Image (cartoon, rainbow, N blue to C red):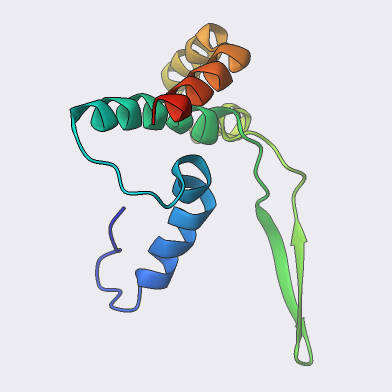
Length: 121
């Protein structure tokens, strides 16, 4: 993961995402060799689908300041795929493709693939 353009203090953002996703899956070890590359590729492919399609996430609804305190309100957690399917700006072709992907994904097999790749590491 790299920094965003024109953000010289972006390293904290990158490290936050590494800690939230990558370090939780892989750990802090250093991996070398082709076998590690293959296992990491399998792991990241399965984790990408799990995180970006199936894993529910909170989205900020509103933020207000009361004196020094900031009060944040969130929408209920929804998987990103469902959020895309309900959005009006997404074309029907993209929604049909996403529904096809959702129909072919097996969450249990995906978690088994993640665990198997972690064991290979």
